[in-house]
Amino acid sequence: MSTNPKLSLGPILFYWPKEEIYQFYEQAAEMPVDIIYLGETVCSKRRSLKTQDWIDIAVKLSEQSDKQIVLSTLALLEAESELKTLRRICENGRFSVEANDIGAVQILHQRKLPFVTGPSINIYNVETLKHLAAKGLTRWVMPLELGRETLQLMQQQRPEGVETEVFCHGRMPLTLSARCFTARSHNLPKDDCQYKCIEYPEGRLLSTQDGEALLAINGIQTVSAKSCNLLPELTELKRLEVDVLRISPQYRHTEKIVTAYSQALAGDQPEDLQPYIPLGSCDGYWHGNSGNL
Image 1 (cartoon, helix red, strand yellow):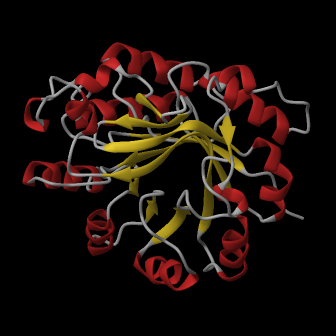
Image 2 (cartoon, helix red, strand yellow):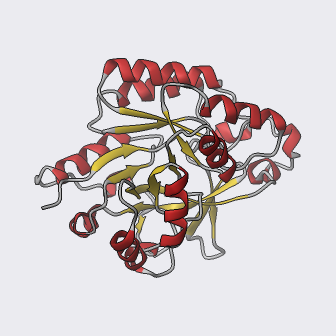
């Protein structure tokens, strides 16, 4: 008989002020999650917190609770300074690491350290999963564009000792680019972006010509406008023996969303999440359809 999945809080994808990040993790310490991912995964120019600040938060959270703390790395590295930061995170000596770039996987493998792979690592088949397991993979986060049928095949043959985590709630991280879309939308070059991302704590919304919310630009990252919401799929996720359900932080009401998932896992009737998803939810990828459905 399978046990209930754990809940995780993914890394903050957006650029928030320093004080608000600290406040968020003070609240996160009390949330019913088992795993918390920390760190900047999108853009190294976001300097609200430095690497040591993230490590300090990790230490504090680990001392305040029994939650597993994981340090997350950038998903796109473009400069030597970013490689230095990557090495420092990988060599922190205390906390496990979520590798969001294959370079991080290589560093962690060379140092014989176990690691988690984030959704930006393209694990699309069992052969890749086995290859990374041999290098030290202990948990993988399924890429957002994969669905239930692919997951079922992966689960049937996944290597022993490797956990599966599924992104269940939040605006979906879709693509990364060397160009900064937010800066460009303000007619600014990337090198002089004036940190415009901080003005959009959940990304800058993009709509179709018909006025339908489609995407949001988040610096060099594009995310969905609607929020992935797999709470109605909880029974299926449990049947597939998914180990961890990831909730991506949003600017408001993250604690309400976490509580709803926790209630559902406990067998209680969860609170309706629709009031906390202003642009609606989508689960198209999960069902093998267009992601916006």
